[in-house]
Image (cartoon, chains in turn orange, green):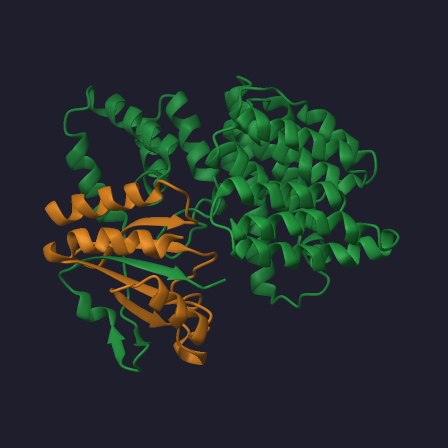
Length: 102
Length: 338
């Protein structure tokens, strides 16, 4: 699962101005809240909107889960990844570090 | 210890359930049994025990739809978690011989080919595809599975045959026929048809490149040029078309055009082969790799999408806007608890 790995990366680099925003797409509020609680996620966790505020598929055209974007200081999406395999967290951390240092 | 016992109870239970009825009951109880297996798995936390549950399920219900899923999990656990790729291959081979349903045998065959390749073994993919084709014509997704596997094992004649077949499914009528229960809008159907054309052309062209028929590959890519712009929100192409087209352009000595085609996959999509080709294109243009790092940075900034501001609620009910992240580096992770 991706989010606990992101928690680890977040703890390491948050002092340098790194954030994580998790957006739960299905509005499964109870199950999502349980997961967030059990995995002790400390970063920002948001719920997808409804109707006109539905953003995950409507705005960001997300086709599958998990999907990650890495956003730089100017709001540019510099990295995109669909799915999650062991080791992907290392690629994400590397990308994040290069943006934090750049 | 206790958890282990639960697993053993389940392992003994599955063949018991199997004995309860005929073919129809077997399929019905397969889904029930798989649900029970999931419950048992929730109590386990090591791959050694988990793999037994999945493998026992496959043995008990070799022809069920769930068997394919269970086999995938068993391969992952035995092959990668327990580092026993040969064991995973043997089990997948056994699973295929236990299954008699042509659809299941095909699905298992694809998984078998994939793991066998990882273990350095060769499985006759053509035979697997032909066996199903003898029963009924393959559908789009099945052709794509064959293409995907044949690409990995470098069987480009086979890629070419099945990619050409995929192209025949790129019509609105065929797409709607494939999903009779869905009522897709014309716009959605049109997009899906274009994407099918993109996949078919990408692989047809890729096969032609590898079969040293570069001129024909270029014709395929040029004819699909209208699909080149088919990309997602962040600008990453929906199909591998641009990445193979870029490869063809590179091989034909047109590195500037290759670089344009390859950049989104290489830099935003994180595709390694596109990245290697982009680097080769850069070196051809500039005579050396000097300045490549800064080229990457500026190109990425040029092609990247600026995220738009949305406001969503957190679990305390407060609104959070993405604009509040200005000046920060962040990961936006879309998920669901599944």
